[in-house]
Amino acid sequence: MKYLKIKTCKGIVKGKTIVLEKDTGLPEGIKAHVLIKPIRPNPEKVIKEQLKRLKEAPEVGRLLYRNREELYER
Image 1 (cartoon, one colour):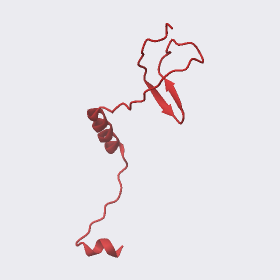
Image 2: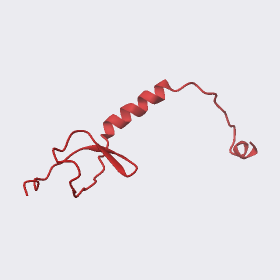
Image 3: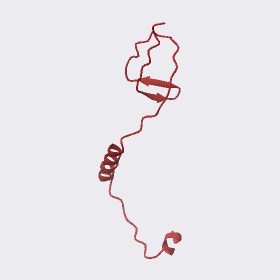
Image 4: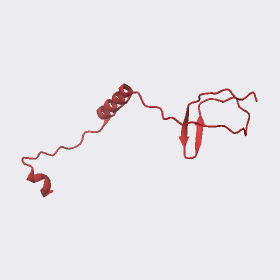
């Protein structure tokens, strides 16, 4: 068999389907062994995105509590 070459592909899981970013080059209907490994997001990118969303968030009212018991009265 000439299909024994191992390939790595990235994709997105949608239920029981995996949508690949590019064509595998394998013929339609061939069986394949699939190893799924989640891609970890870049922590710096996540922090930048969170800060961006925080700055874009609408201003909301603030509550001022003078003592802890006021928290439980509401």
